[in-house]
Image (cartoon, rainbow, N blue to C red; front, side, top):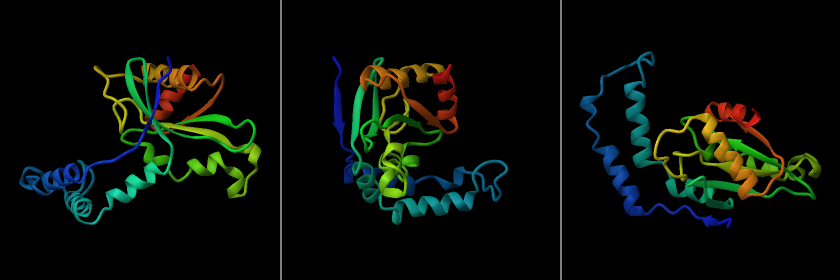
Length: 189
């Protein structure tokens, strides 16, 4: 039985306020005031970005951007996996699995999903279109947390099972950055 469920991101205002409050109340005195970048994050930069996130960043705008795509969840090898799937234009688009790095998320790909799936609308040919599948890797974003750490070899099996067993693709191509690239190496293997 292949269960694939629609997914819509909806972080409540209450939950967002709790996060904002936690960041605002962070005990800054516990952090060493590193002014360069050699030993970690620059102290002043961290304070500036934390202030931006709690006072100016528009989470709902980002949430709407994510929800503008078709989001799904399914269980693969006992683990909840979230993914975006954008069906490509044309008669036979090539399936393309895009995997983010660490630390990273599906957000890395939001600007290119439609361009890859509907290349004819961006100066390309319709025959160059892909079915674009962008998963949240296990333990990231909206996918489930594994019970114990998963290395790239095991994650590649989970991603392959998503593509072949759940989405029923016989063949596909894959791309990944950072951690996703290591997973791609195991997919190729």
